[in-house]
View 1: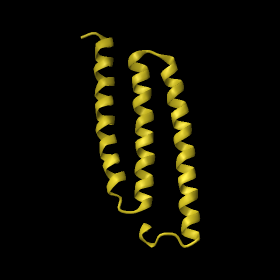
View 2: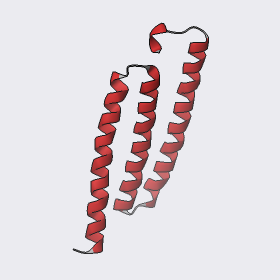
View 3: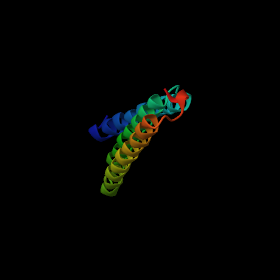
View 4: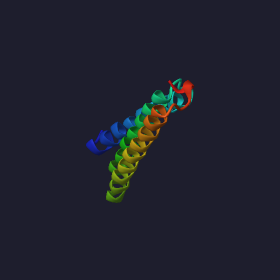
Length: 100
C-alpha cells in the first residue's frame, strides 16, 4: 500500500466520522431542550463543517476550498455571537419563559 493511498483512506475515514458527528449534533440542535443547548449544537455543527471542508480541501488538493473554509468559520463565529446577543437581550427584557 502506497503512502498516498493510506493518506486518502485516513482522510476519507475522518470525513465519515465527522459526518456522523454532524448528524448527532444536528439531532441535538433539533431536540434541545433549551435554547442554550441548541446554540451550542449549532456552533458544534459549524465547527464540524469547517473540519469537513478542510478535509475535503486536502483530499481534492485545492487551495480555494481552504479559503471557503476560513470564510465559513468567520461567518459561523459572527452568527453565533449574534444569536447570543439576541438571546441575552431577550432574557434581560423578560422574553419567553420556556427558553431555559
